[in-house]
Image 1 (cartoon, rainbow, N blue to C red):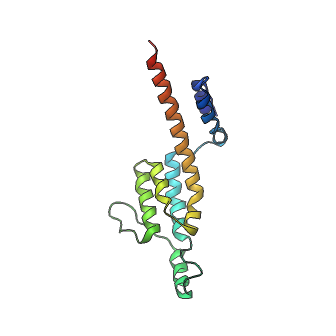
Image 2 (image 1 turned 45 degrees about the horizontal axis):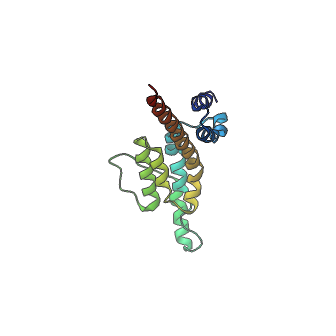
Length: 156
């Protein structure tokens, strides 16, 4: 709340910016996770949950359903430059998100998970929502700062 109050003071009488900052009030009460926290959550909980999500459905035979369940019992995810190529769309989305997070690009990480569907998308949704709140807050504050710097440059 202290950071939001400072931003609101900086916005002054700018009605558009005051309205934009009002959208951050709910998050100001509980705080928004940092990039480091979101990256850790993704690595430790979200990526494994996505990989454990049921892939098939009613349209696959019982043998494939059994194999899918066995594969989800233990999730081993190798990361880094020497990691094997991802198998399938789900692993590709996770790999892209992981690379984006390691590069500090939270918006790209969320975008990489947009390709997920079904239960995998459901597993990623809460984390993606928290990450997008962070992205939105950073964009809002950057815009406020940019507007104030531009305004201060106009004055002699």
